[in-house]
Length: 132
Image 1 (spheres, rainbow, N blue to C red):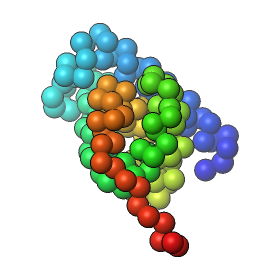
Image 2: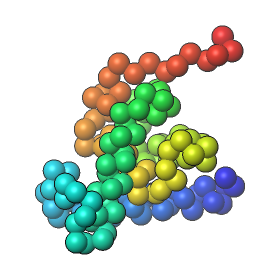
Image 3: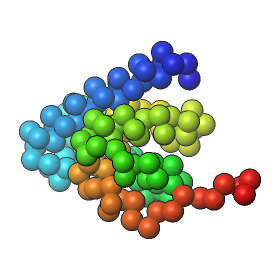
């Protein structure tokens, strides 16, 4: 992805993050999101679907092995996490192994922020480079 498009995608992730944070604050946290994506409000249904996808991503070892190693040094706010996560996940999205969705990327950042890096990265050891 070209630098301009990468920057635009990162901005879309940050905009989605802001939208998610506002929604979560208004609804009282992650548990307040609708449990099913058939919420009559299409924006909430889209957010819930993205959150469901993000939950499945943070359970994947290949995703955690890419995200976790450098995440310990990232400042503890969701925006900083989103800025770190976006360029790390973008190659996976381009390869088609994760969704190319700013909202999903934002939800991954929200999960790391709300659940905690230590909790999500517990026991995650990056895969050894095959050239070793």
